[in-house]
Image 1: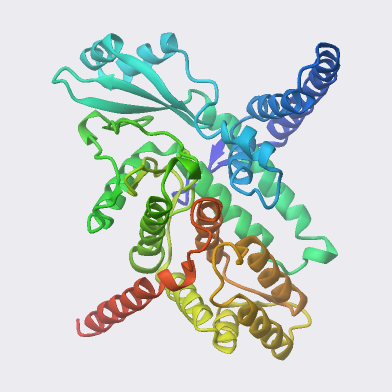
Image 2: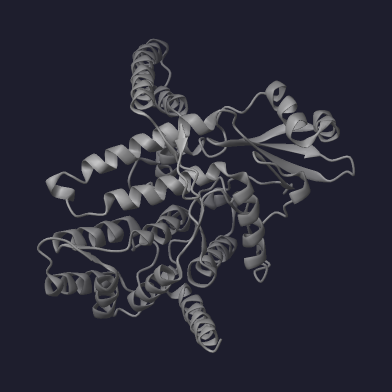
Amino acid sequence: MNVHNDGTQLPVAGWWEICARVVQVVGVLVRSTLRLCWSSGHALVTGRGLADARNAWLVNTITDLGPAFIKLAQMLSTRQDLVSPKICAALAGLYDDVRPIPVSDLLPLLELRLGQRFAQAVRRDVGAVAAGSIACVYRATLPDGRAVAVKVRRPGIERVLGTDLAIMRRTARLLARTPKLRGVPVVEIMTQLTESVYRQLDFANERDSLERLRHNLKGFPEVRVPRVYPELCGEDIVVMEFVDDLRRLRPTDLTAERREQAVISALRAVYQMLFKDGLVHCDLHPGNLYLRPDGSVVIVDAGFTVQLRPLAQDKFASFFHHMTKGNGQRCAEIVLSTATAGSGRDSAGFCRELCALVERSTGASAADFDLVSFASQLFDIQRRYGLYADPQFVFPILSLLVLEGTVRDFAPDIDFQQEAVPFLVNGTLERAVRAWQATLG
């Protein structure tokens, strides 16, 4: 694969690679369909649950298809309002229960990257803790007795993931030419998303992002980000402190008070990212964000983080702030100020419909407010009136979309819009002060 020279390291797949990958995907689907027929028949004969057989087939098929498909399934697993709870439960295993790298393959890799002394220490005490689509995590004990988590990138994943993302980009270019999507910044949005996903292979960037998140959230004692050991990290390995007893809890595992406390802790961490720091974690699914029985939370991964441009951050913060106030007119003006005008632009009609949408959504609790529906209606209104907002708005919305499933399950009565207000105000003031100081030289 060739590589761009713009710093993104996003590969460009040739047609033969794309065709080969498409053939491979079709082959997986054909074999998987045959397995489904066999397993369904076997379930009927033996009396075992047909639904369980289908769920197992779904997870195995997605795993066989590769990391890009696993990433999509992970996001869907948080959306019980889009797919059935049983399917969500099945897909949840893809957070950190994908097939791990065999230890026999892991140890030579560690010795090659980090030296024989480290590999020997790991050999004495190693165990797979989590296995995701891009990397696997192992618990190890260092010679000095420290317990660490060793995150190792899957060998050879760059080629497969890069080809899948190239297919998505080419598909986006084709979709952008269809009458329904003509003028929509589909290509720009897909480019930003695929670049962000591919950056998850850059473990040096993840190490830096973890350290920045830890620093940015140090004022929140209820939010824990593991400490990184830079001297032990490599281009495809991140070593960090090991956090004991991380497990995905059900709402019934916590008291109502602890559920609300944990959700508020998570929301405040996200609002700190969105409205103050600008370094946004876009992948806070239950495999990366753990709610604890004491009401605290742990963030253990920073692979999918995005640094928002200051202007995009200001515009999104202002939009969110005025939405909490029910000021639809101001929300419309903000979108208009960032929009790319398409054919048939109708600013008056857009303002009218967006005002009505904001009025319906203001002050709603997590149980009553559906972010997927709101985002879909927002983009639909823009499209119908020939307006397309800054593609960087996708990242803040994606961050909230992934978290919303957890909020709905654990604390549906929280007014998460109102919880954002202090961060909106403080973040806006801080950025204004920094801008003013910059003008003074």
